[in-house]
Image 1 (cartoon, one colour):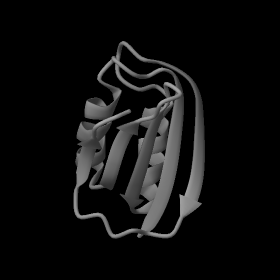
Image 2: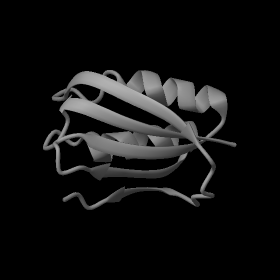
Image 3: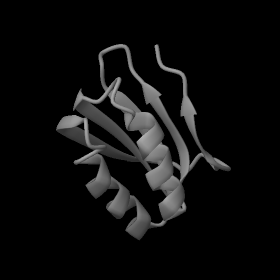
Length: 91
């Protein structure tokens, strides 16, 4: 089990990025959460296999249809043991 933290910048709030990321994460068998940040970015913590996280990163670099992704930062971190993937309310 690996854990990655993704911070996605661009036009990523108000375009269903969090909800779309939840659907993609569930499809890939990932757990974690997506959250809007005050600076306009989206923060996603995701856990699962290396292959699933790699596929999820590729998805994050495109996002849903109305998003414009300018930059994605990815960091590895210790696993948190999330049980599901959820959308958390943003700031």
